[in-house]
Image (tube, rainbow, N blue to C red; front, side, top):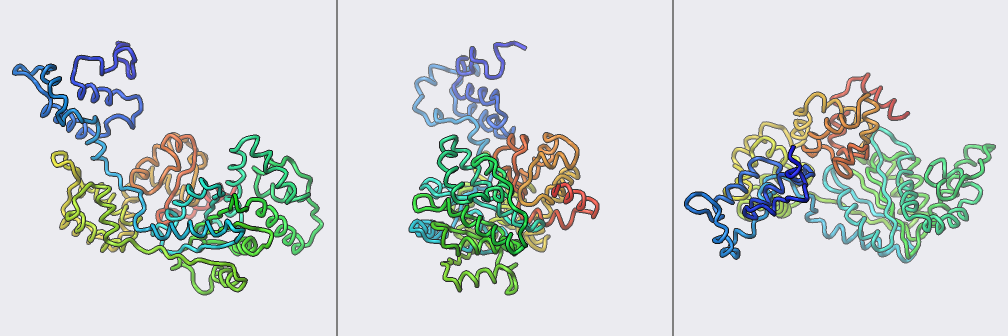
Length: 498
């Protein structure tokens, strides 16, 4: 209870005590207010203390020799960073992209071409987990920095309608609103000129639009279905035409086109062929192994090709052994000869699929087959033991499923309901479905975050506040198809639609 030693106390910081700077740094890290800034493991703390014992000068009675330390300030020991070894010992596979430089360059090349008022499409294809979305999202920042609009949406295996495509344009409305009063003043007259007296039609689809253009008069309902569709096509084209220009090109990224409904594909065809729309790049990602010759997407591609819309076909291929080796060096700081054999095993067992590579590494780490050696300051493993461990499963997908099965029943139950909400879900919605608090939901999801099965869009604290969490398709599909009973599935789906 002594206030002189309260956490974060500014009157007597550890650095003011008569102790070695290294020890003061350790104490300060232990007393950090933010849990993430403290030591994350006891071995990490012990490694720093042992370093101090080995390198700091002590007299024969075991007392710290300040004078000797002063004379040896130039020694390597003075470069000590508290918690560095603890940080190294926390296994976190790098999220950096490997072997995708040409793909990223091709996307940026397409973006530069549409600056000349052109319309273009890029179709990114490959297996689940191969990194299609990661490649596309890499260009988000450079496009935004150069004045372009980058908006994105994702089709869902369980909910197929145009509302999912409208998510991307709702994002566009939020970007305008985020620009403040001046941004709204700039775009309000342009949007009103484009939509005329039919603004209510777009507000029904994009509720945020009303905050930009204000309430709009009700629409006439005395139209046939064909007339209503024609009116919508005209208004939607005029609305999209507002945003694409050589100075501010519009990039629309729609993921998982293999699950797109026919109406959404028709909208994509509409905006790519409308003469009123300029400087538009539509990027679509899909699993080509799930798109057969009779798939609606194939018909859309054929129609666009006939109408001479430029389409770039981009296949995202598996990582090579050299790319996995580079990933291992960045993640484990291992030497090249050691990493090469490890990389060959990973490539052989995962086929170079980045998602499976990361999942296999996390599985080996959680099973104690990939450990940090504090004496050598590096990660160590036994290739033969790893080889035998993976032979116990039919494929790497089974390892992902084992990760889910290892979770506590309470955590699995939360994931079951999350799976019904698609690739992104809110902890607020989950809490409402399960009739509990957001804090409880976040706690039950934490092990899944650690296992890499789900990913908070922002931080753990943000997910506690109810912001979205990303659920990988492979994990969501397995959970949805294998852990549900009929009543639970019906309850979750019903609540989602409400």
